Length: 185
Length: 264
Image 1: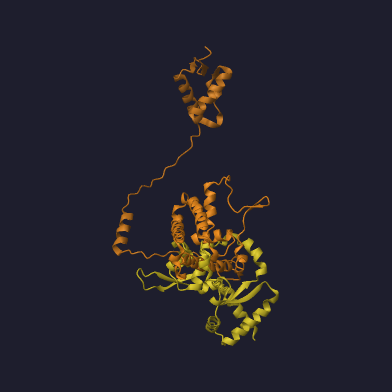
Image 2: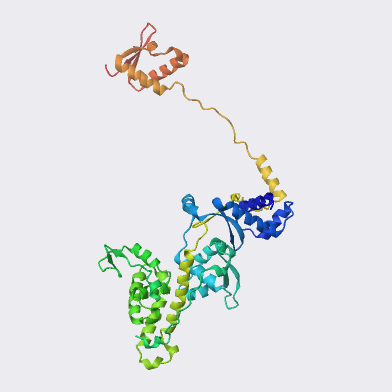
């Protein structure tokens, strides 16, 4: 593996600051005049992973590709550095995004049915602004409500590759369902 | 079985004693209640909390007991957060309805499908699945909170808004003619400080006269001030004479004397 190729891949990952697909990397490198195969890029990434072992960096694969991250041992100090910039996500918002993630595509009404409370426009907007959800279409019922789905960005931000990497949704415990009657007040 | 993960809601402990309910004599400032109620993300969340507090399974839900507790909470909220209370009131009505139906003779809902609690229990269970999973997702590593992206990316620069402006040739022409024909309001003038002020000189003269009562005019002059000094001093003494503070005396000797008139 040529060191120049490895460094070029590193440079792009560092310069992009976002996840990059292998094909994206290939495109850029080819446009800059390099003849390169997808397998070379994959190998470069492996080489980089090895190179980073003793550093504070690491390469992770998330939904939108490969990206450079700072190893999480350093998170406490970085948190001090960027303290003000991490907005808290409320319990209610977390419930809303969870319902969208497991039930997508859903309308606001679907979310309200499960949560038993009105879902504010503000919370939907805040998820849209975060790029965690997007409108995938409109349900063909009166009012044509928007259907929401989660985005790759949502998975990226949670360091996940697939929606199936989310924790399993617990099953409803159906035990002793017959007992409901006998337990009546 | 389920109680294990249900029991995660901790009760407040004061001096080693656990409190399951708010003590009657506790003073709660109105704003604090709002915060306390905001803890619940909806009526189902509140119901679940009440059920957990009793440490019972959802399936063993005792509607009449829960309804009473629920209504107590609603009363607390009612005056404070009306907007929020709407969804809570719907639930209160649902609970009341179930409770009333349960009071009917049992035969009337013999069929399992007819258990008035069934749909509420189903909703609670469904809600609980998502509540549980959302708590798990909330603690998943999150970007900019638990881990950080390494990047040498250029910082995002604020884009200058380039709104397209529609201007016609005529607009420009009329603007330039307006500018050209605009009257010239500019004229320069210099503002000088008054080097020698009459007012100041009056003060000086008065001070001198306080000490000596009478002084010859020439003695009050300062050479570097030249002619201007003479003029200002003369003006000052005339001013004083006019207001009756001094007397100006000139004998044949040509020397002018300034005499304080108060001591006469």
